[in-house]
Image (spheres, rainbow, N blue to C red):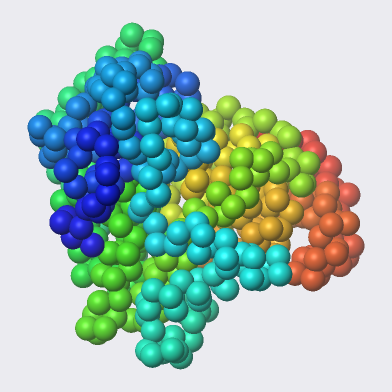
Length: 506
């Protein structure tokens, strides 16, 4: 998709409202004047990561600078007040928002007409037809194959390129043992800050000093694209320089390498600066011209055209009530050291390292999210809705539609298996195998009891014990329940887990 590909709306209103995650050219109808509203109330209501707030405001102001006379940019306390200042009672269009709350709000405004969503490959009606055709089965693998076929992505005729749909088994290598502290790959694209970035930072400083808002985490320098030109350069840099090594180490972690071979494009995609189709097309071009292997390209395409589209559509398919799912009955509050991103309070090296990366960058890739942060929360029975809110606020790519299904369904199994076939809980052995995090750690991944018992290993068996009846009925977890009954020192392990509690820093 090029910058000239903005859609033409028949009978479009003169004014079109752009939310802060609708910043690409494909969101603005041809001939319309954009309305953009910067609301401070958004940051007062919830405590966001400082880098997230900076990126969002920087991206909005960069888009306004690009549009020049084609935008009415208003700074107001609320969206309702800002819309009134910008256009009064004139009619306005807006692309379908990305959250249930935002959709309810714009539908409550008499002057606003909601257009279909943009920034995604699969329309709602197409997804719903697929969902109804599967006899209640909503597995990502089935959906992903349908997307590949209908959009002719990585296809050779009617067959998948290379003869296989799924190359996941080629993408699970641990980090190379002799590579040093970081992967032997080119560094990711880094944008250059400008006067807009400096002004945003100055404004955020002023808001904090006045006590109007409070943030968590650290800000700066900006590491993610804030305008369309930067996003396109970041995409080109990834597909030209890093995509080739993405696949094999997709699930690996290194303490000193927060980015690994990942694209770091999720924030740009979720701001609307990139369209998913152009990312998929760029990756496939790399495969066709022989500069990236199929396992890397398929792995990336699976993330963008598969998982991202799946999460977006499931968010709307399940509806607002999905947020209340809590099949495991987990209600423990998130502890202060976690919500404050206090990595220094944590002795477990894997969790401390990942918390520090969230604190410093507002981003970690999918394995630290799932198998370090989410795994720890699942084992301790933290409230899944509160954890969803934390992920939303603390990640630069976090939005309600992204995090709700990812955390409630994938990470915390709070929906009882509507998305995944088993809970993603594991002991320290998995982290040890897929990272360099365990070697220097005070804890030992193989120890279940004692002073050096790994919190993840102890927590895993305590989780299996707590939910043993449910897990025994699942063929993917029944073996763990059988192993539980044969563990030595099980009583000691459970006693240690109780003493450590759900909120103690490991």
